[in-house]
Length: 518
Image 1 (cartoon, rainbow, N blue to C red):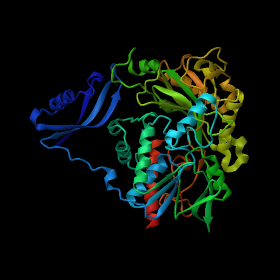
Image 2: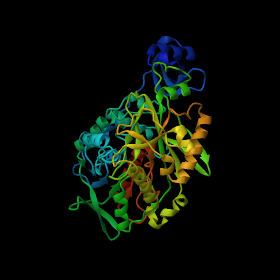
Image 3: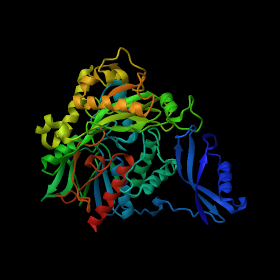
Image 4: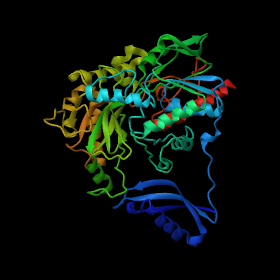
């Protein structure tokens, strides 16, 4: 017999199996010898009261043991001789599409413009320390995509988009801790993800797939209105019956390439703003009500949102115990993002704080047509870059000065390695963005007492929240509405917003490709 119940534990008791077992016995009023196993199904933190506690949802097995679930990878077969599917991009959408194709008996060939996770680190060091941006290898491009070195949060609200549990189990089977299967807000960390990503690559290779780095798609092979392959590095052809396009939200050249081939794309709304960094102890004090965070309590986070002048203002990609990192993908632009290591032990907390941008908000850029959002996005990134000295040092202001429209006399310490300097961010941002952010953060201060403080730093600009372009596809077939054989996928196509949702979209698209082949 299996009984499902909820257990509350103090932080000090987390991980103590005997205490958990005792709580289950007390709640069920059963004999100790009748309780065979206790499996935690869900774990979350409840910090609404005076003292935070963990809320566990558990399965209690009475006089029986849980059946072992077979590994997903045990179902894989060799696909080296199977029909090939081209996947452009080795981010979560592309890699999980590849795993799904193998399970379905098709051979994935991943073409990645960037480098493998190990070689990629040198280019990340170059942008951090010297301000040098490699347009093919950076925080967005390379094995694992943007998520590999930008935190590894796995939380998604897209529960209807696919099989979340399967995606998480595949990550565990490739080296992630089993905690991600039960945590309400699972997280891996940018120091752990590279190894997991490399393990996924090895699985793809082991079963006969291919993963090719420094393979930049420079053209498409379109015959009679059908996608039949790609050209790499201006010379080498790769042909297949289907091409999965999973290039991420920053592959601007791919959008232009689609447009040149008259493959329909469209401008879409996105969001733009800044990244705000607080001292982590301050956020802990606000959220937990404790001067010093208890053992076993993780660095606390927050999620804030409000409406200002008919536009949403909201926190995005919150990184407790995290770092702010440079995320530009080309010289001449300045973009920031956030990340956390697995332990989330940085003394800083940061979050993107952005404003929803609708097409009508970008009217001065309407002459760019489908590239309206992209042009608007680039203009802001270039304005922030041009204000500086030509490197990746970022314009910044104390939060209170930002609201007052003042240049800060001095700045707090920061996690941002290239460094920050006092600048008129209120003038660098488009006026509509700044005005809504100014009002939005004050509203956040009313909702979260202590948030609005001069100890917080506003760093610009946070502009890669999502793709400003959508590649339309059929809801039924996942194929481009007009180009047979082209399967837009993930964030770059406008159908995902994070590691987990991109992974699930990759799986969905792979299944659609399998139906197309059969």
